[in-house]
Length: 271
Image 1: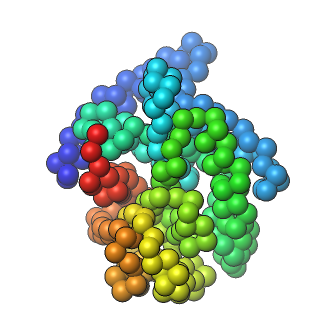
Image 2: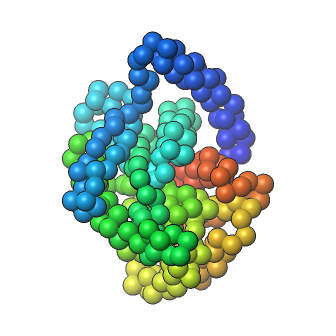
């Protein structure tokens, strides 16, 4: 798969160059270059207007009976187009994962949305509970009603977003099917997510989920104790994998992590 990823990156460069050229010409012609639908949701739970970007499979309306898994991407400014490019190449060219609907959720205050409690360094934190309720009661129902979505849902989160993905598993395990956690901030709140794992798995022995966790050259993310807990307590139906990217920084490992995450989640998938 390493060779596949290298080939993918090389094959993507001409396309990115073409997009860059098209964007430059589009700007000079005062026209827009867009991918996906930009949607605004008036959230009663959050008491704010949430912006999301929805990227559907190409020509999906030509197959009205076909439904697609949904990939929810946090921090879309950093990860949305990477997730879309990987999903498109893996599903259309390599056919090692299904065609999917990609949804990016824009956060004006990511610490507020992603962190379960406030902290001295992050005083606006503490809105993760409301953000999760927004997902379950407003965002997911909207996507399920407006687009041909299946109940198979993946969430991709980086850093505090990765922490939120784990938080979502622990608090609403039925909401997502799979999780890609990129350098997750599992150290936060004195490793509270780690401490909840034994009891969580004891109450969910028949759980069937997939989780991929990556770690960069960071040393204090709280990932290793979390891995040890998964090794000790996770039941057989909970598939998980971990990759350490020692040569990557906190900001550079996202692309490789999403590649490896999709490969792990859909390892046994067949068209």
